[in-house]
Image 1 (tube, chains in turn red, purple):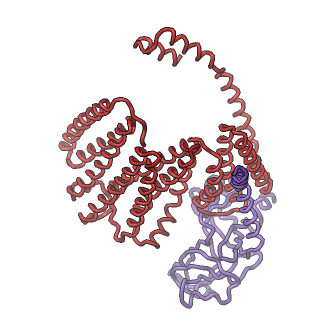
Image 2 (cartoon, rainbow over the protein chains, first blue to last red; image 1 turned 135 degrees about the vertical axis):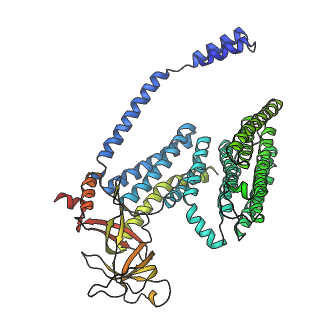
Image 3 (cartoon, rainbow over the protein chains, first blue to last red; image 1 turned 120 degrees about the horizontal axis):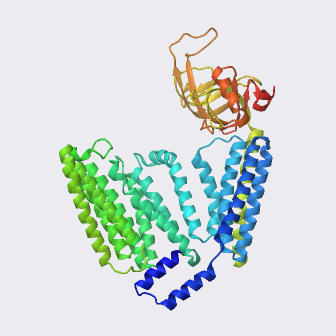
Length: 390
Length: 193
């Protein structure tokens, strides 16, 4: 049905002739699968699985602790054997699914041991143990993007849950508040892991996903100095963050030998992001800002406010330019939308009172419409997408 | 090269069972070798003492204080078999940090807070309340079997029962919850009576 609708459109537009449409329809029919039967079978299997889980859960407290742990360890061992067999015989999908299952079993095993022995610890400790156990086999046997994404998300969640003790340790080691270092280093680490992972040709797809997660983390953190006024009294954390950024930039410089446009774009994002952080913190420090809330700052320190907003807009301008250059229209549109929203917020906050707010909304809305039209025009002029660099 | 790669894959796939097995052995070893002390506890949040299947609690230390202020360790003075252990707060530095006379020491963080009341007959040192969390016990939650949760909650609300925890204290001063009791009995034994 879906294909037919497009076939009719493409035929009407003169993109394909009747014979091509007929051939496509015949091929699609030959590829058709009994989806409803599969769905019914899947529903049955799901119901059986849920039934087993419910029966076990109902008798959970009656099952001795040693038996629960023994069953969990046996399931871990059996799944590990399954992963090995799938890896040896080249069953890619089975290998990836079993590896994902094994990761879940390890996490459930840690939770089970904690429950049976009443081991009372922080969440990040359990997650770190989980990552330490699972990362080696994920790195050795998996190749899929899904596993790459799952690993990057798990690493991010582990990092976020450990942020408080990390903050304490770094504050003691470096002095002051290491907010910049803590926020920035996750994206850098994911980026470095993704790049190194990509050195194995069979892991490129997975590596690209990890790199994309790193880029997302870096892009997201550039929002932080916009909403929190950061003025670290001691700069040791900033220095470490700068050194880490330069090391990753050096790695990307090296990577240019393999993928010049991609590595260059990533290097620009790292350095531009670093520049945006440093410039914003310098603006807050030089303006002698007090408190740590950004909102409402427009009325007390309009120049500092404007400066910080312009730094942010300039950074996202760089991102949108890179996206346009790489032919990534969606990314370009997203980056452009961020700029437009920031301009809109700046415009709105700069005006106080109901009448001015109303006028500000009208003016800001018109500005948004104008910028959206500009973005549309630029995106159309960019023409056919080039090879993706980011 | 192929053999080396196969060996590496086997090693990484053996890690889950090896790691989980090591956690079990470590937990068993710690429980077997550790000193055990009993501490009284009380339900913490009267609105929802049993949050889901977990009991939220605070320690109710049987304390013999010598100072008011920050406490970095506890000196366990006596460990009766069926009663809460007697403890003395230890400061980080100075004379109040001495471990002389201690059966063993529990690491953690806390404060001895002064209270403006008269000392009870036989009571020594400053009057007050000890708030101390041993290292290794951070959440203040205990798993309660679902079949007993409702009855336990009503007993706690009525204040009819005394809860205690047996803490297994390792050589490094960190603790783990070994067992917990209602009026000196295990949960199942208490509700079976």
